[in-house]
Amino acid sequence: MEEVRDLVEEDPPAEVLAEAAAAFGLLASASRLHIMWALAQGESDVTRLAERVGGALPAVSQHLTKLKLAGLVRARREGRRQMYVVDDPQVVAVVRLILRQMTERAGRGHAAPEARRVPRTGA
Picture 1 (cartoon, rainbow, N blue to C red):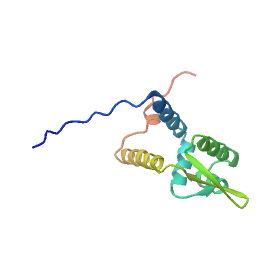
Picture 2 (cartoon, one colour; picture 1 turned 180 degrees about the vertical axis):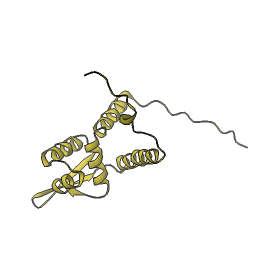
Picture 3 (cartoon, one colour; picture 1 turned 180 degrees about the horizontal axis):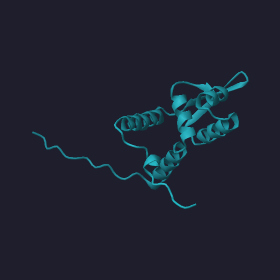
Picture 4 (spheres, rainbow, N blue to C red; picture 1 turned 135 degrees about the vertical axis):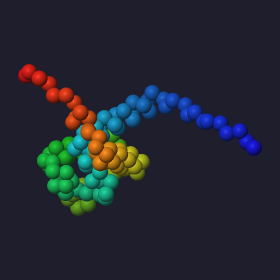
């Protein structure tokens, strides 16, 4: 019988940690997270995305620019429109995982962090 050993992965390099933190920072915006969720369902142009996520067209366009610069989404031209799609299926998996987890927690009666905060007294 072979001896089974726990494999311990090495810590990621600092550059990788910094890139991951930047990606998570971009996804920390509820609007950008919603955009990523919508794009995970399929490609879309900025007008349809703005309608779907309930955002102003210029704001959604700015969010898409940030996501594109970070390499999380890509765009292709279709006539006069830019069509956006998530550029990394692994990012889609992470977005789906965290949203599924938060939905399950909400269903079990766990409050979101904002709901657990104690309101400040005295303005």
